Length: 123
Image 1 (tube, rainbow, N blue to C red):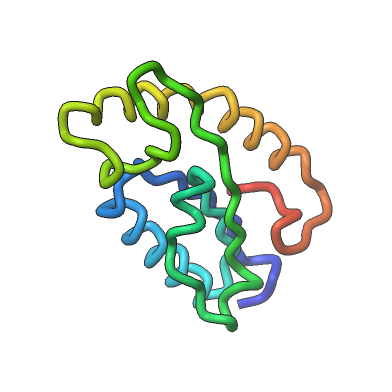
Image 2: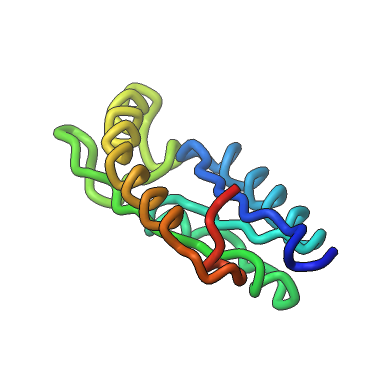
């Protein structure tokens, strides 16, 4: 595939490893086909994802969006595995708080005009 035909895909999975891991698999499959992927998540969840194979790393960029503080949600709780079931609702509230940072990311990403790699606008 030539660079002009490649897509720039942005993925932003729910904060559960049952979502994060499959989205990472999807990102790697897209990267194997020459597409660019920006993978958004929280800092701790990005740090906990398994490494991308070296040959795919030029195609996959990880971007961290800090999870907003929510009363009752302990610091560092950034995935469903970090909280008991009765606190998942607080994680959902925090995730909803990422709407503005996500919109800011997309606004900035859509302003990129370089036409290369991660400088490409998302498709």
